[in-house]
Every structure is written in structure tokens, then in C-alpha cells.
Image (cartoon, rainbow, N blue to C red; front, side, top):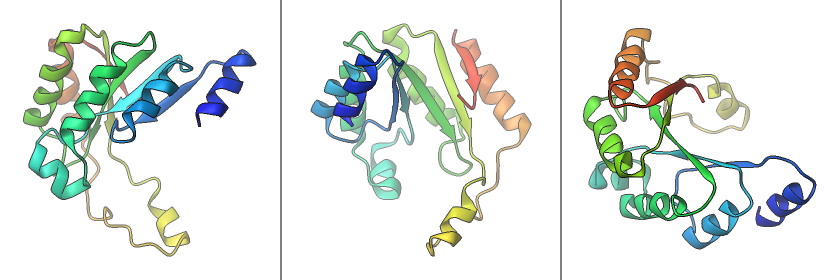
Length: 158
């Protein structure tokens, strides 16, 4: 990935990556040198639940974000909104509290959808999220208003 980003930059292309911040932080920092933007997905902000449900080390994720904020790359925090997992004000407030010191202007909200569910069937894989409802417009609007009240420009589906 690093070599691809280097080549794209040499050719004059704008570059971006998307991450949960859970990968190799050294490699992520190297990639940031060749990115114009990094879309950083914050998921579960409860350490025990994040580990149990999605297998991530929240401290590592938060450290990765902090490290990226020392680079010249534009980092955009994104909040997937998944009912029963991340679509609640407690989780959103934990993200907002964490990113507050960085004086960011923009937050993207990613309402859960079922668009990719058929891919699992095609690949012969079990899709465990099929019973998860799509957030209502009212739920997404409420989170949007809440995030905007904290001073952020909100992009839905960014």
C-alpha cells in the first residue's frame, strides 16, 4: 500500500486511505506522509465492548489517531452509526470528547446500511448483521444535531 501511495503522489494524484486505526501504527504513519486525507473510523468507545465485539484494542486505536494528528495529512473522524452497537449518544460523546483537543472542523456520520449484504451470500459467507435495522432518519438527524451542537460541520455518509 505504501508503494502504491508513493507512486500515486509522484504521478500527481490526490490520495486518501480509510482506517480503523487498529493496524500497524508505524506503517499507518508512513502512509500518512503520502496521503492528502485519512478517513478514520471510530467504532466502539468502550474498551471492553470493543475488544469483545469487534476484537480491537481501543487504546491502540486512540494512540493511532493521536499520532496521525501530528502529521500534515488531513484526518477526518467518522462515526459509523449501527443500532445496538454505536448508535447512541454515550458512544458519540466519547468520540467527541476524545477529538475535542484536536480542534477539528468536520465529522462524518456513516449510517448503517444493508447494501453489501448480498456479497456475503455470493462468497458463501454468513452475514451476521442481517437482523440489524437501518437507523431511522430521525435517529440520524438527532445525532447530527448533537454533533453540530459541539461545533462540527457534519457530513452524512462521507
